[in-house]
Length: 118
Picture (cartoon, rainbow, N blue to C red):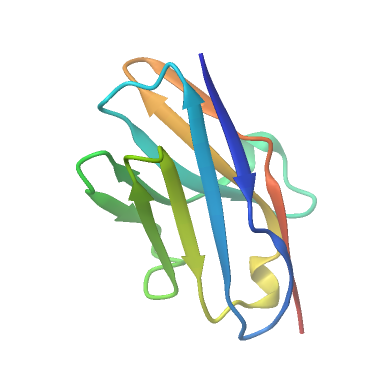
């Protein structure tokens, strides 16, 4: 089983930046994909928005809504994925979730709150 611990959320003014981290531990496969999603206020779990993902081979995919503002990266030695978020907007306010996936297995982190004030 894999455990995810997210950190780095908080309150920031519009235009500011935050860097989220997600550390994975446990039975981690050497080939996996880790990504970031967010759940906006009032939205249900099934409405979580995909933001970005990165494979152990460093292949990345981004949602159009965050391209150019958010950057995903990872440190395979630390089993940690990062999300650098720049030029934040009030509409980026949400709970941000990390997700780990390998062969038929997926798990979510507990989420970290990001609040962007105008």
